Image 1 (tube, rainbow, N blue to C red):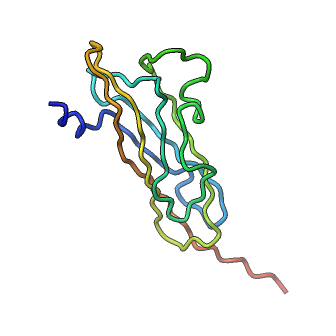
Image 2 (image 1 turned 90 degrees about the vertical axis):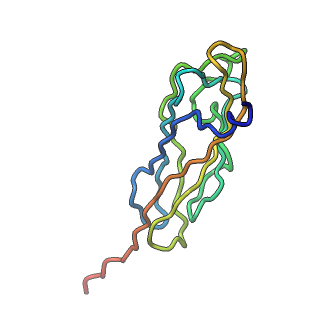
Length: 147
């Protein structure tokens, strides 16, 4: 039974780049929408979840991973013990398109590490789940100067 729990994605995650189309050097953000996928489990506040950036594909981020505290999903100091997270705000991770990025579709891959517990409190599980977002890099043509 326990091995079957490892195969379940307990969260529904949707990640979108805003804006979707950028040129090299421009800034954007990845908005991440998270909801608990199963009514019989709760996402726990401690340990705080972490979002790791696994494959950047020409996108530049300031960090390799972000915690729930970094993303303001949980306020530091408010949580003293593990308890269910009632609602998760939209999480935003800023990025910049690399100056040498080639035009076309670029995919950034993430992995979230989190703790879920059954509503009845009989079990808890620390697990990971992968997700991704896409960004379209446009080619930039400098306008000609008038003579």
